[in-house]
Image (cartoon, rainbow, N blue to C red; front, side):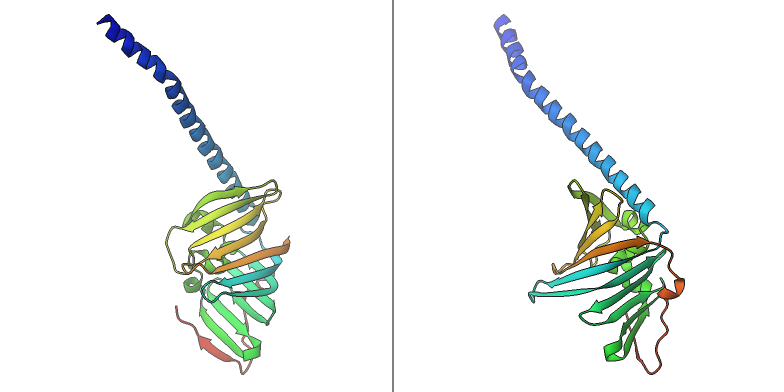
Length: 228
């Protein structure tokens, strides 16, 4: 009986190092999760402070990749944003066209085709698609599951997964400056694994006249009503 007790005691002693290691791993993991959560909260707070209700403009370059067709397309231009939901994307290369919304109406103007597509902005910018979250940063916390995908000395890369799935948005990667919380790049992927990568340059936070986000349709322009 005494030998049995000694054997049980020795087995217990042998397991103590394993128990300590397991406890250490559990505590370390919990601390890492807490730190990651704190980093994410700090980053989102910085983003919201930087962009909430602030107007800004920037130059942009865009790369669109259509996976199935193996086509890459590039474009560039200027963009302007105002809260809430107001945007103007002015494409200058390779062909000039404009995408304008005042948060209610949407105009897509193609001067080379003498054509304006007219639609309801709320229908076309669901879940913050089309960069709409840039004009209402609160959409990020409300409509996406967010995690920090990467962190370098200069930037954070956020992974945004929409809480409500749509064909247009499977995921978004957002690269943010640690220095000033400027959004440097966004990469949007759809369910077909097509991607749109937009890089912002010369970001300026400044007042923008509200008239910029309305569009007066030129005389004799063909107007096509979009449905969505």
